[in-house]
Image (tube, rainbow, N blue to C red; front, side):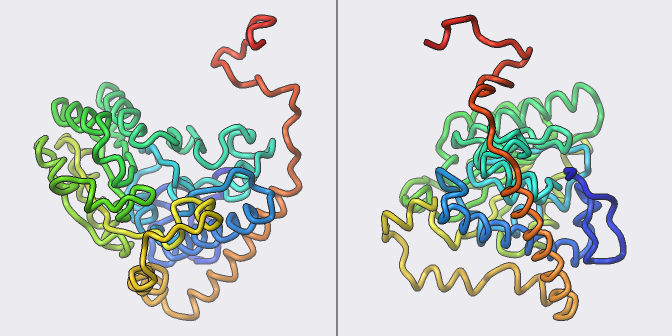
Amino acid sequence: MTAAAGAATDDPTARGGTGTAALGTPAQRYRMLRLIRGFEELALGLVKSGVITGGIHPYIGQEAVAVGVCAALDPGDRLTSTHRGHGHVLARGVDPCRLLAELAGRVDGLNRGRGGSMHAADLSLGILGANGIVGAGAPIAVGAAWAARQAGDGRVAVSFFGDGALNQGVLLESLNLAAMWRLPVVFVCENNGYATTLPAATAVAGTAVGRAAAFGIPAVTVDGMDTEAVRTATEEAVARARAGGGPGFLECRTYRFEGHHTMERRMKLRYRTPEEVADWRARDPLPRAAAAIGEAAATALDVAVAADLAEAERFALASELPDPEGALDYLYADGRRPRAGATR
């Protein structure tokens, strides 16, 4: 399997390539929404069965943000992701077969089974890595944006993060540096209302866009349940950054339909009311995107995605588990192993 499966075609059921080529039409964007949703539902089942150990942070409900943002990027652009990052890397063009194998810790995974759910990366697609540390992707994206400006290659970097990162010093430092150097980077805050179980309204003084405005960064709040609204806002921020206008900031108001982590089901936490969840589920981005392309086209895409996910599951389960003897392989950038006795 390869990370990119060929160029986009006029056939909406054909598997697309990467970047804007795979997300250039409403049908392609709907297909990606459906792929991310189905992938997460499949992953939840594999967590329950024990195939995926350690659990995951489901992205169900937030798909419009990943698809809308990635639809506005060029193939050479770069991004950093988060602990809830499956949707980001899939929307960027990662093969679901290899991503699912990675979640299952298999040798054919995206990162040979060593990254798992929270650290998927594919440098060939400009994915500089998901990150389990809240807000830690921001300075990496700023570094990539600085490198792009130095090279003069016109690339833009995007950093995804949640509302829980708004009070992290490293994010504020990244905003400051990007603004001072007018770097081509777009900061995307996926505000789903909760940092684990802590309501953002009780933890964030002021507003998300106010954080960016304090540094002179153009910032807008977007309906994160509307793929097209996210895409339009991202296109504007990306175009400005690519033209030398400096960084941009998007606050995408969204919602996770599932808990913060799969462990939440076992813990039976109760911090959201059923009415709140139901209200947000009524704004599910998939039906809206399906309506834009028609029932027949959406149904055909649903069937095609189901086949892709069945293949992803077959591929992941057929892949071998890593040999413990190679646990230290790929640990060092130069390929060297530690000195004898160094790990004792």
